[in-house]
Image 1 (tube, helix red, strand yellow):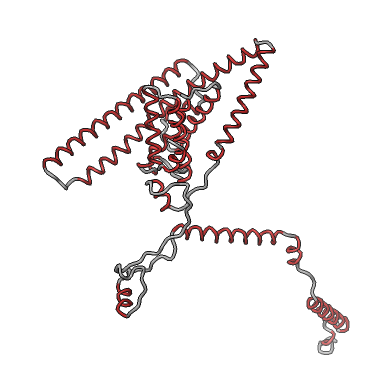
Image 2 (image 1 turned 45 degrees about the vertical axis):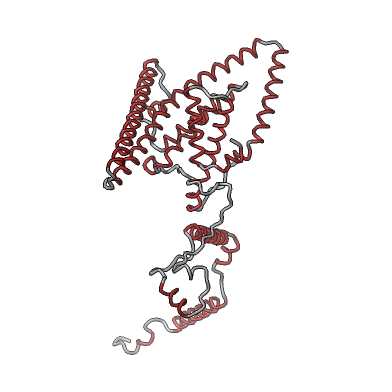
Length: 403
């Protein structure tokens, strides 16, 4: 499986191929080339899942469609295959595998797929006593056995239904009840994938604990060798570590084109085409949709030459107004309008908070106000002078009887 061929494969084909490699490596042990090809296919699956935006952090398991549930297992399969890679630097392999397992567990926790017992243990910081660890392992083992028996039961039920359907189709074709069978198949498929994820969670917790213990043992052995070894051995270890670091940086530079975050796909139609294998992620897509044309084949794509064709074109039209743009184009235009509105508001707020704007709004004394103040002062002075010249009751002295 070359790189060009992998680029042209759909997400479903990549996942199924990687799943077969994982199954073979888990049962009998696959060779290193197959394991590395499986890891490469799963990394490509992760990139396509990220581009298509199949999962969101604000969703739960009920919001995910049945056809997309299987892709939750991509980091778990990648962690198990990475752990089987044979490499001199075993500690680095253990760290990468643990990171993928933690990613799988945290995402399942966001999807509300992790059991409450495991959540309580993680919030308490892990069981400390031997009895608590034993009880946790027993409960996990029971969940694992229950999931395995449930998967076996679903498989046998599906095989029995397939045999009965084939026998009934050979004997008498019956059209009634096909929708119920399809609904049962959809419910069984969803139940099977949820059970598979539950089984993978049990294995992920056990594998994570085992890898942590192995990493601690290898780190302790390496520290002991460094402490007990002489200067020549220490220098050789340092040279080997420097060489591994250079090799790791060289490999990281080669993988940079795959590890960079890919731009998301914003067109729902193009994303559906990629999921169903009609298009590839590497294709350039623009939000240009051809308008729908109604009418007979003679009018579609042709020019209206006579009155008969003009009348026929007016007849064969939909009863509603056709959209002038797609949903994606409308969303992009609304985003552009919102960005302009936010920029204009930010500019207005900045101007309102600036010093020159505040100074220009300060009320200052104007000429009209000065004239009004002078007129009021003159009027008040004239009234005071008149009251001085005419004291109160001065005009009524001759009218009083005793005046």
